Image (cartoon, rainbow over all chains, first blue to last red; front, side, top):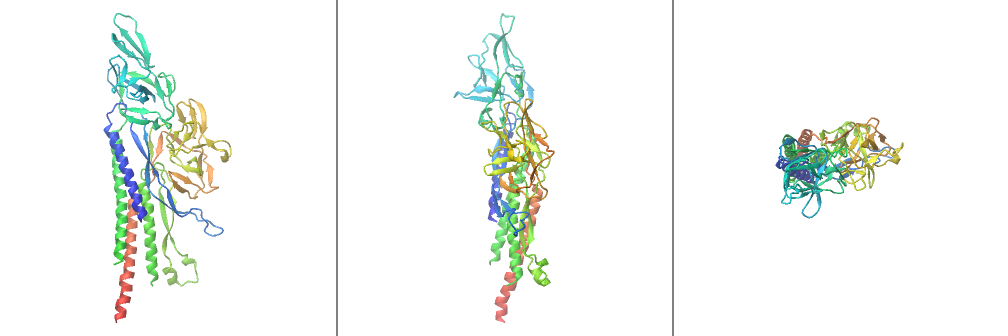
Length: 263
Length: 251
C-alpha cells in the first residue's frame, strides 16, 4: 500500500511538470518561430512479486507473473517540428522558411545557434541581425544607400542602389537541416543549439537539398502552438492529476481503516 | 481461530496489491507506448478439485489472493507529432531494441539519432533493423544524412535510397510480456516471430492505452471491497473473538 502512495505521487509530479510545459507552450502561442514542446513520460521499474514464466511445477510454467510498476517519470521534452502558420507582414527583412531548415546566427559568445524566427533587422553596420542582435551566418551586409532589398526563394539577397539600373547580389542566406530537430537544445530567445541527439546539421542554400526548404520574403512563421490542443492537454493533465490524488486518498483511507481495526 | 479471519485477511492483502497496480496504471496515463496492467485473483487452494475435503471445508479454504497481472496490449491513441523520427505501429507489432541486457520490445517509437547516426531510443539503445533472413543477425540501423522517410512496412529511406528496414515483431497469441520500465518489454524465449504485415506510421506516437475512467472505476471497486474485508475482519475480531474472550468467560 505504501507503494501505491509513492506511485501516485510520481504520477502527480509528472502531471505537474506536464502542466509547466503546457504553460510555456501557451505563453509562447504568439512567439514567431516558436516550436511547441511535448513532454514524454516513461514507466519506472517493476517489482517482481511473481516472475512471469516461473516454474509452477517441474513441467509447467506460470502463464502470468505478478509485477507491480512503481510509477512514472518525465523522460524528455521533445520539440515538435510541425510548421507554424505563415502570415504576410510586407517587411522585406521578415523571412519564413517553407521546409524543415533553420537560419544560422552567431550568438555573442561566438557559438552558432539555429532559429526558425525570421524577423531580421539591420544593425549600425548594415548587417542582418535577429531582434536580439545576433548576426546572421554567413553575414550579409546591406549597403546604406540601398533602395530595396529582395531575397529570393533560394536565399540570394540582392539590393538596388541609387543611380543603378541593375540589382547587385550582396550575399546568400544558408539554411541548416538537422537529422533529428526534436533533439535540439532550446536556449531561449527562439534559439536552438545542436546536440549529439540532434546530430550535425547539413548546411546548404535554400532549396538545394530535400527538406531544407525555401525562403519566403515578407512572411513570418508564427508559433506552431495550437491553443485548442494545449487546452485539451491541460484538461487531460488536470484530470490525470486528480486521478492520481484519488489513489493517494484511497490508499490513505484503507490504511486509516486498518488502524481503526486495532482498537 | 476462525478460518474466515484468514480469508478476509488474505483478501485485504490482495486488494492492497491491486491498489498498487491501479496506482501505476493511473500514474502512467500520459506515458508514450505504455500498456496498462490488469490484476486477476486466484483461489489460494484448488479446494474444489480436492475431493477429500467436505464442501464446507472447500468453501472455507477458498481464499482470494492476487494471482498475478497481465499486460493489456491493445493500442493506445495515436497522436501526430510531425517529427520524422517519431514512429508508431498501427497494428499489433513491436519495435525490437538492443539493450545492454538483451533484446527488448517496445511500442514507444520516439526515436532519435546518436553521434554515429544510429537510430536509438530515448534510453540510448539502438533500434534493431532486419539484418538477414534469421532474426539472430539483426543489426542497428544507420541513417545517412538527409530527409528520412519511413514506409508502412518499416523501410527507411533517405532521398530515395534504402537505409534499412525496422525489425517489427509480434508474439504468439496469449504469451505474456513482462514490463521492465522505460516502455520496454521482455518476451518469453521462442514466442517472438516477425510481423508479416506491419503498419508503421511516421510522424506519430502511440499514447498510453490506460483509460482513466476504467482506472478510477477499478480504484473505487478496490476501495469498496477492501472496506468489506476490513468490516469482516472487524466482525471476527470484535464481535466474535472479543465476545468469546470477555462475555463467555464471565458467564
